[in-house]
Image 1: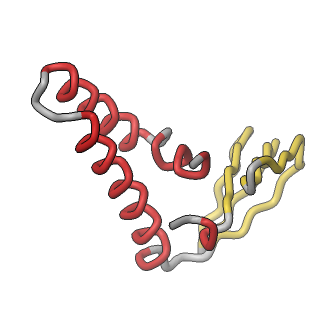
Image 2: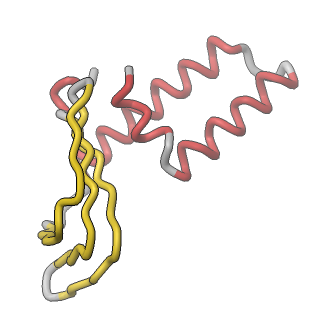
Length: 105
């Protein structure tokens, strides 16, 4: 499913995939088990984001481009300002990828 690629493209997801690839190539792990680990990783990331994230973030910026494909929104912002509590951070370019969590298993 394409929405899971969001988690897999994160730095922790990329490291996990590299480690699983090495284990499969060395014969330590079967491809089926590696796939099950990735599916569990996707579910764990989804659950963690739903239950552990407690902060609210507001953002402003110039919406440069946006796309909606396969139930996934992609927004590209320029001159973005993120506000978390009383802290404000200015960022030149931001790419936001969002999907409906109800569509995830």
